[in-house]
Amino acid sequence: MAKKIVIFGGAGLVGSGFIDLNKDVFEIVSPTIEELDILEKQAVSKFIEDSGCSSVINFAAFTNVEAAEAQKEDKNGMCYRINAIGAKNVAEVCKNFNKYLIHISTEYVFDGTKADSPYNEEDKQNPVNWYGQTKYFAEQLVLESGSLLTLVRICMPFSPFYEPKKDVARFFLEQLRSGEEIVAIEDQKITPTIVSDIANALKVLVEAEKTGIYHVCSTNFTTPFEFAKMIAAKFGLDMNLVKPISFADYNKNKQAKLLKNSWLDPAKFVMQFGGNILHSVREDIEIFKQAVDGRSIN
Image 1 (cartoon, rainbow, N blue to C red):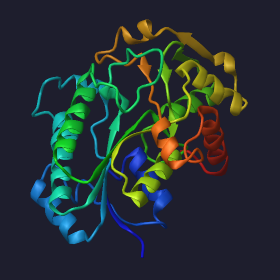
Image 2 (spheres, one colour; image 1 turned 120 degrees about the vertical axis):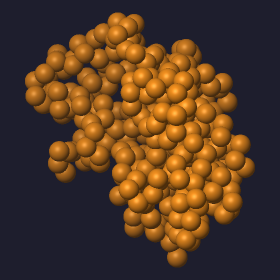
Image 3 (cartoon, rainbow, N blue to C red; image 1 turned 180 degrees about the horizontal axis):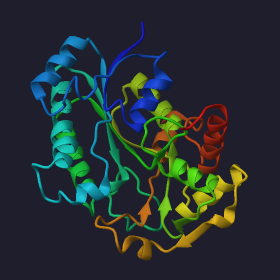
Image 4 (cartoon, rainbow, N blue to C red; image 1 turned 45 degrees about the vertical axis):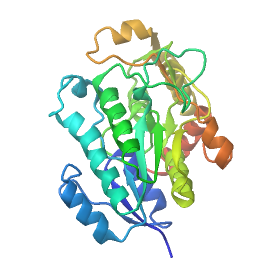
């Protein structure tokens, strides 16, 4: 009999990808925000109790980094409430009903100053913007809940489909196909990750009910400039449309500080679960290309 999972945030990029790719593996229940608001703890409690689920994955988050910065230090703002209070509610309810929880977090809990190697699970969090701060608060609150849980940090998810909001890969592809110039950072380290890899990794974690902290991302790093050029090359588009900009110049007009070294190390996950789940950036772009060729991304 298939495991029953409750998904919060199932309409987002990663949540919708997980549901689509695992709907035949698990029995999945994913209430919309209209059906259930994770800020209403009693409603969350009743829903999880009534669901008969064994596991919960919380993808729900306020992820607009610039919009979050406009709410800085405001614990009544939606960014803090969704990311921290909502996460706390879900974790405490999972503890109460002895449900296994996967909580989704981000590289933004770090400060981006680590240049010599990617961030691993043991590195100290030190967020530099309000979005990262609220996700750090969430991590603390979830871990303090005492629930049986896995905390999964992901980095720059991208997908050939799911969700109207375009991720960086689809944005780059659309610009290139339109013959429009792309200005991309040449000195920022990133580990962009295709959603199908994240979904497959989460499937393994749900099945194993493995607890702890894991980084789930591509197995090597790139820069936004190189990422855009790889996409251009893979799709046979004009690589000369991709122009470099320094991180300092790109970041100077941003309200929210970005991370210069926005990369994660998935070695722990790969060591424990094998090397056939997560892929390199180049392999992820190949998977992206095959999916785009087989299905409209509009």
